[in-house]
Image 1 (cartoon, rainbow, N blue to C red):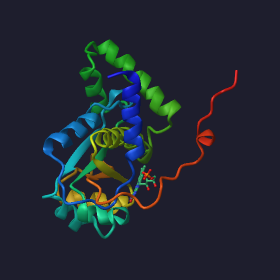
Image 2: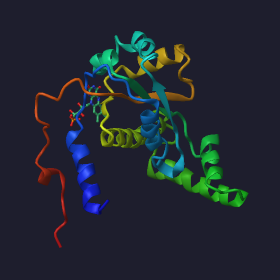
Image 3: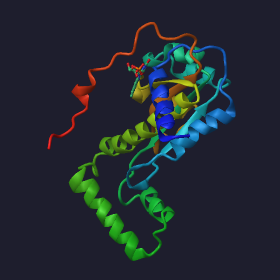
Length: 226
Ligand SMILES: Cc1cc2nc3c(=O)[nH]c(=O)nc-3n(C[C@H](O)[C@H](O)[C@H](O)COP(=O)(O)O)c2cc1C
């Protein structure tokens, strides 16, 4: 396939993708969900931390999710009723430069010499302390990993759109209560992690009534003049 054909295919997927709230009865195959999840798994993360987990809630388990969170997930009402799958994007808490998960990420990437590990961890200490000013702020540390889950979110929505699967990103819920309830279900370890966002997946029941609205392109894309 030529580059132009690939660009057209990607552009078509972007034109077709909208946030779909109501889905048909058609279920997504496990194979297709695994394809979508691969694009989350393979997403880039800051310092290669991979401070995330993706919990797949299939049609069989959606009633359990719905019973636990429907009253506080105002942004997920029709999706909880009709989606084929939900994916919960879970972000790690307290990923400090001196945590085990930071060290594990370095080892995973091939750093084994203690001196190399020490110098990289010193760099991350400066990054988290001086540059990002998050090191003594649990909320800021969590925000750092949470915002990285949005990269995986975008990749999943795009890969789904490329194979004709619809989705809706969802952050319309009471964060504290949702996480407490999912901890009660045993789905997350609230000491170590929290759900940042969710995505509903399925096949649209019908096309949207309204055309997609966007700001004029020139308002959001700036080329610097020479
Ligand atoms: C981070 C994020 C969170 C969102 N949360 C919700 C939500 O809770 N419920 C919902 O129905 N739509 C949600 N949306 C969908 C947006 O409303 C939608 O993407 C936006 O209006 C643009 O429309 P489009 O996706 O159809 O192009 C969310 C979108 C993003 C990117």
